[in-house]
Length: 492
Image 1 (cartoon, rainbow, N blue to C red):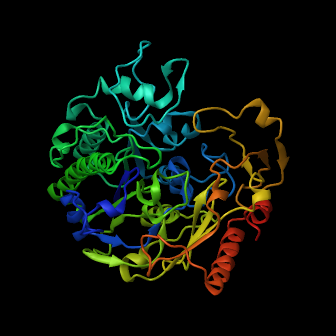
Image 2 (cartoon, rainbow, N blue to C red):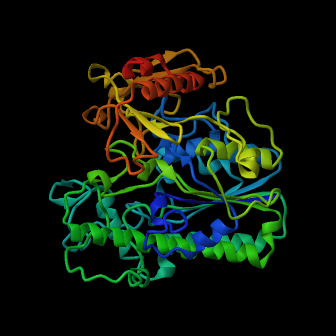
Image 3 (cartoon, one colour):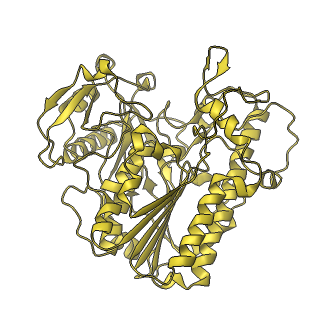
């Protein structure tokens, strides 16, 4: 048996015609895939954002209640590593720059082999001391420091000088390498290819030919990297959305290359295909751009997911059951007849794929130090911390690293060694003081009726539903062996 994961970052399902017939996005290959697979109507995020989601892919467990962004822990089970240990060859191809930073630095080494593509976003790739030339822009997403441009923003404009033609783009190179892998290995057995592109994550930098598919009469400033509050004009917002659509179309074109390879070599007969994303993105809906500084509305939390399983051959069908990223790990282990560790929280998706048999009643999701959220597919409940408890949050870790830095000495001076959790394999862990990073208290607790209000425009008050969602949230947190202060922080 063989399997391919095609993993996009920041793919908003409402911009795919197979999910939203009203969209003007050009994406025929996602529609083609939908006709040849199971399309999941209630796929939800778990732990946000990028690397926490990937920890879920490896471990099959929620990350966000115990720890923020960081590496795999010494006690973590890793899906590709378990497959490798059981005779399945695993290969990662990615341009996701966060894998090569402090906070994601030990994920790729779990695979049998891996390939790195440089240059996405603010990847510190090309060396240039002089400031790059940057056109007038609507918004600068990074702060200015010392008179020069800082952080990801500066390096992105350095990188763009070396990414001009379509063949230069990291996404293109990822799919080039994937096609090469399939050319070499399509006749072999027992392998997993994890193909991952950072696109359509911002900045929405895309070759001109894709922009030309979305004609417009915009003559304003450059704008393809939105952040924060949506304070721009309607024309500027439409322009930025156009940039996103063009990038989704590029993603679609490259997806078609994988589908073509599966057609050419008859791989539908023996190869599982999973196509999905870590999360979506707000494109000025609810007055915001992005994903973390606001509640996890469904533009972010409700994700596209497609699975072709050659054992069941279910295609052009919809499944309504709730599924999450934590389910991918046990599903792949089961597919390759590999034992599933006892600490896994996710469920094998075979029953959902075959008969839409529910494998969970609720989906828990959130970000470390933010709202804790839960949905049953009909309602979404977003629980905010108590104002006086907002900063009562701690990292539990043996890998004290942030996205692109180590924990500071000041942070580590707060660290104490505490007894093991049920899933740490007997290892005590460091408890390190943290704080609210998202100011979620300003939004408060919210409840939405997703059937009556799918765009979540008007929170409701319904004591009966809220009590039911609270009971489900407490149960899910207890099943995760959640730290006690998380309950206290939420007033549960």
